Length: 209
Image (cartoon, rainbow, N blue to C red; front, side, top):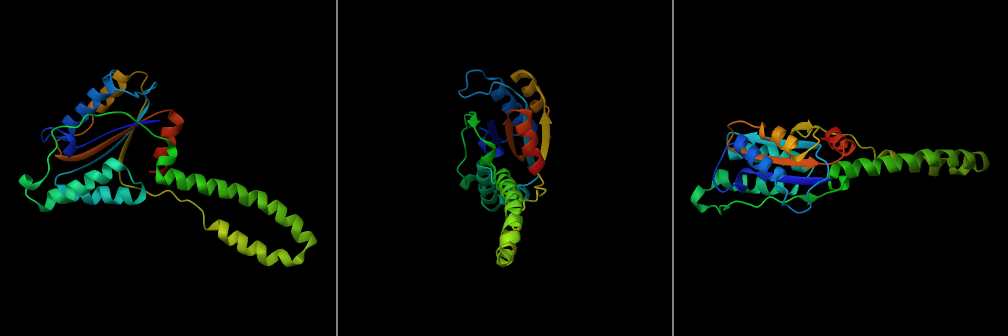
């Protein structure tokens, strides 16, 4: 799975989210970039606001549940932007967009869900063993209760992060880029993160966000 992210403070000059989406689309179509994906199904996460304080607030909610490095950096910048004069901020001259390789376990909700699924499997297997032990040793009842309580605490419940998500099915970089380029509006404060990978992987991410 691959990732490509762009936020409002990465651009050489202030621009709308629509323009930012077009810049992201250009990066997708650029065949010279290293570590580019081989298939182009995408899941686009986007957050936007009319002022930096609101954007920071929205991103904080997302990052508490599912930390994304680029969203964390954007939150910090937006907070500073909302309290300091523009001239006091360290401005970017434009950031070179490069593909990053990710696994599902890089996302905290996916890791939590995997742990919960594995513990559930252990729990099911253990119940059969406990039943056999209970037949032979009546004193294991207390151990069984304590064990069940510990395993039940590991249940995972997906939360609503509040991030806008759009699942995109594309066979080529150009088709994915065209879908991304149409995203966004006039908002001046925004953050975009595109995951590219197998449809099953993207559906799992969408399911927990």
